[in-house]
Amino acid sequence: MTNVDIIRKAQNEFLQSGRPQIKTGMEVEVHQIIKEGNKQRIQRFKGIVIKTAGKSELEKTITVRRKIGAFGVEKVFAIHSPTIEKIDVLRQFKVRRKSIKFIRELTGKAARLKEIKMDSATLNAEKALPVVSYPEVKAAAPKAEAKAETPAEEVVVEETKTEEK
Image (cartoon, helix red, strand yellow):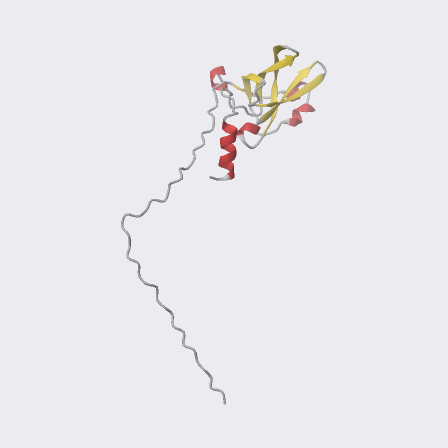
């Protein structure tokens, strides 16, 4: 078992189910649980995904940008965080990059993206969690047929004696 398999096995129990496949250029609505004292409420944040990051499945994060008045607000969410109740994908835009941070400087018509028409069921389809298969360790079974031991060849070394005069 490699180190990667060990890490995946440890991370599998913390992955949240019901998360869609999220890519850059999607308009999403993230429902986050906010705890204030003894009370808790759900806060929604709606915006466009401008960046995805993270190598392993548990480390996946998204940066969501929303324009509020004259200001742009960005939030980074861990996809499999227990504080995230659900993520709804509203629309998908045509994007050819992993990060579209350049959209921060654009305003008005220049900031428009071309929408890809899809139904919400396709967009919000649950992403299958990765299945980690572990190789079985087989115990060394004794062989049924025992071979007769052959005696090892003895090596005879002849010593040469030099005669002293």
